Amino acid sequence: MNEEEYHLNGKDILEKDFKTSMRGYNQEEVDEYLDLIIQDYDRFQQEIERLQQENERLKKLSSSESNQRQRQTQTPASNHQVNYDILKRVSNLEKAVFGNKYAD
Image (cartoon, rainbow, N blue to C red; front, side):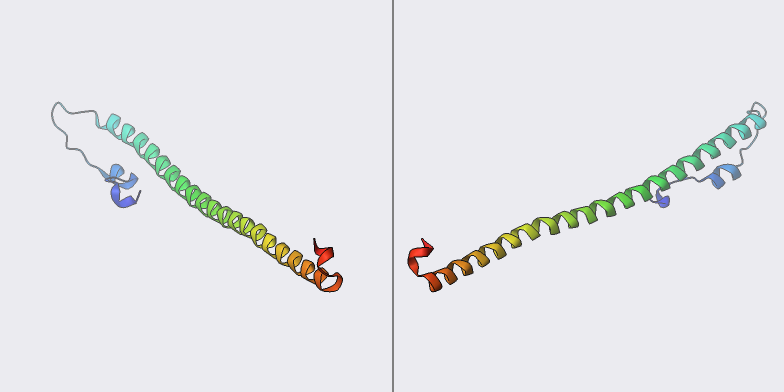
């Protein structure tokens, strides 16, 4: 979520001015309640930012682990090919040195 999606921030809440009327609310109670809202709002904003950072960190970690796993799975496959090539060369060498009877 971007801050652009929020309609209010702590400063907006703090600076909100309500009109009073004859049968209006107790202004001190409203101010005390708005102070609590501001504190909670700020905590929620900090928690959102912390979670976004944690999310980014985990994405990077997951990506690097995925890349590492890919490299590990590619290495054995290429090692098998190298091993096969070496065995084939040894077999050809044995045929050349000892003849076809030894290769069977």
